[in-house]
Amino acid sequence: MFQRLFGRERQANRAITEALYAQIVAAARQTVFYSDWNVPDTPLGRFEMLSLHMFLFQHRLRGEGGAAAEVAQVLIDEFFMDVEHSLRELGIGDVGVPKRMKKLAKMFYGRTAAYDDALERDDRDALAAALARNVRPDAGVWSEASQLAAYVGDANKGLAAQQSESIVSGTVTFPVAKAG
Image 1 (cartoon, one colour):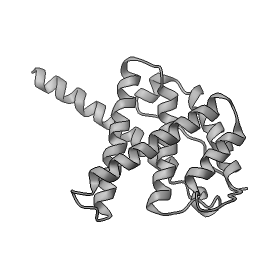
Image 2 (cartoon, rainbow, N blue to C red):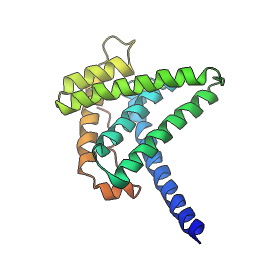
Image 3 (cartoon, rainbow, N blue to C red):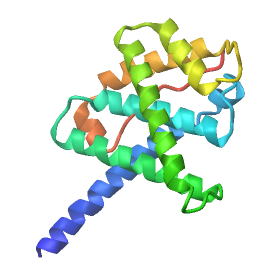
């Protein structure tokens, strides 16, 4: 009996985390980023956008306890498992995966520190500079960085307005990126 009850709870939690992760991935894959804002549609470009959206999600739940903290941890674990799976799909072997994962984790946490600092100071210029440095390091001047920074600011505000209960129940909403 206990196993049946706990099994159902585990399945419900898995469905919630899968739904949240799918919504984060969908937000990161918005066509505008790649077509109009010149984010490279490459594995690294997609990693950057997924990292950015995962950061926004984690930033929203930071400091919350209980179910929100658990969901945040499960989703960051899911994110890194997805990144590892993607590396394997790209043909990276068992020997190379840990080294690449360590590098990508360092990249992720370095970026989140820069984005967090800029958001906390409400400094769109610093945010645009951090995004340009990370998303298009080879571009020199990336004029669309300010559009992405505006999107991140809007997403941050929108996520802050969402009820924690709704998020931990499986619904998170990101803004629709618009060309222009």
